[in-house]
Length: 369
Image 1 (cartoon, rainbow, N blue to C red):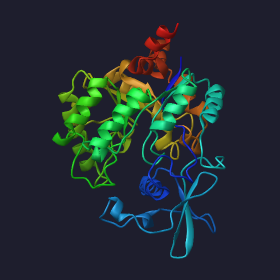
Image 2 (image 1 turned 120 degrees about the vertical axis):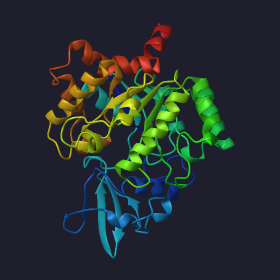
Image 3 (image 1 turned 135 degrees about the vertical axis):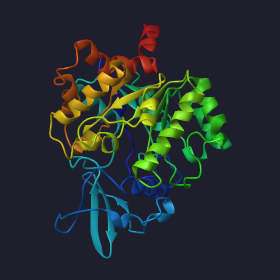
């Protein structure tokens, strides 16, 4: 069984998508593309640009986002206007004529690529996704497992704690997606802050696997990334029996710029924690630089296998976003058909068995039978 541990469904981005307003949703989206791996262009002539006009230097919070008429376009584009000129970030695939991804679209993609099951991640840019992820999971339980998400910087508030209870008890969501999205409220508190202990105690009590995507905020540099990694390590040590997945995997830019992993001791200690697994997901970040079948990524997978073992690794795609760089088939095939250094058993682990065990898919299937 092939399981994609990182996929999305979402409502049309022209709407609020579960947020209190479309304006809030647009703020999340604008923040997402202030430093995108996606390419950005001037609409008039297609000249490639860097979208630095989307934010004010020195302020990486929402307060630093500029007023540029940010809006959702068509053909995968997030558009904006600066000094009378129109621009866009090619955030989704060009073939996405409307910015919407219903469950049926993902199922068609899965069948075509030979993917059996997807774990649906969430997050502010996609929307406040709990209800929609639950809708997809409950309509197609054989195809989807949904994760929940809250406003992480406010995780100590009663309404956020209540949303965790609702997402688990009423909606049936089976894991937590934690995007490390602190920019809306500033960066005063990190994941390990003592104020968030009731939240993490609740997550541990429900035994929800945590899919945590670490950012390099607030400064978008290696020092910030390592500081955030230290905060994660404190959390891992506080809950040693609880399961975490490091979404997107270790940073290539900070730890493998020369094509081989070079981890500082403190990072290596975190990645080696028994309760942390690592996502294998390179095309979404590097598919605009490397060409299929991504021999550079294959070597990095070899390095992760050699250092941590295949039981530590889970394959993910970031569909449908990844199709701005490659097809869904290619996104799985660079591991499934390539990576000759992996045994068949190791490929089975990375491409599905580890994910099934993490989310209890085999147990659920057995109970249903």
